[in-house]
Length: 128
Image (tube, rainbow, N blue to C red):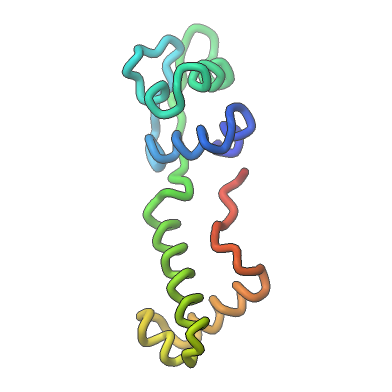
């Protein structure tokens, strides 16, 4: 869903939608008022493009929106990844990193191995 919005009006607008209504069902009105959540989130021009794409006929549509990268789970995951990378960069042993991060030693090993395998990009893949 966010990828589709990003294709229509850009990644910034998709992230704004996720921040505004991510993790919930929200109604996209065919003729929204000026204080509508979508217009507030992305502006009137991008909102009109999104409405034209998703609304059916003269009716609006209710859509389930994913949380997106700003959601608490992804934010926590990125913060943990940064913390583990910082601790590893300090040259700490895996056991010490695990103690400081509140994780198991094996969990730290797996995380650091994935990070090495996939590079140091902790941005993740958000579908667009």
